[in-house]
Structure formats: C-alpha cells, structure tokens
Length: 134
Image (tube, rainbow, N blue to C red; front, side, top):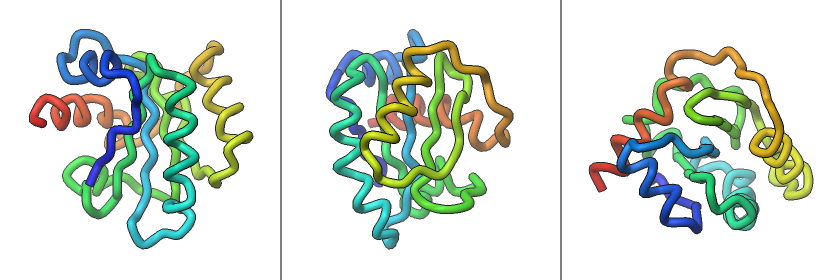
C-alpha cells in the first residue's frame, strides 16, 4: 500500500486539502523488487531533507487504482512534480548521493516540465484524493 514518507505534516495537509500543491516526489515501486526494498530507507532519509515537500511511495500493484496504468520501464521509478507539473520521470537506483543531488536540482532549481503520459501527469490529483479519503 502507499506510504507517506514525508516528515512534515503541513506538506501532507496541503495535499489533502488541495489548497496548494506542494512539491511532490513519488517513488513507483513493486513489493517483489529487491532494489525497491533497498530504495525505501534511502527515500525516507532524503524526505527528511525537504520537509516542505510531500514524498510518497506507491506500489505499482498494491496501489493500482492510482499507479496501475503507468508504463514503468524498470523499478524503482522516481517522479518529481513542482506545483503540479512533472519535472522528472525516470528509473533511479538506490544511490543516496545521486538521488539527493537530482532531487536538490529539481526542487531547488528552475527545472523544466517534461512530457509524460496523462497517467503520470494526474498523480498529484489522484494522491490528493487518496489523502483526502484517509
């Protein structure tokens, strides 16, 4: 099932209330994937560095109502949104330094939107609905 990795309640509260879209990092994974299991503690540590952002881990199978139609080339896949716009969609290995630098560049810089399938683009909206229903 999905796991909220954020440490800041405000980031999740904003997502739940739909008041403002926080920066959002989604890790698409699968329970059977060993690399995904290795990535989980890495993303938990990284989430603590950006308390203003919402970090969520979605299992592509268990959370199929949200992530089931997304075409994933490999696991884990990292999706990063800035104010509801996708700025990254790609496979990420559990190399903490590399992932930290990537997220820093995306959340602290001026990244450009990337073209993604509609299923990926709607993740913030679907996650808002998930959090609101919880």
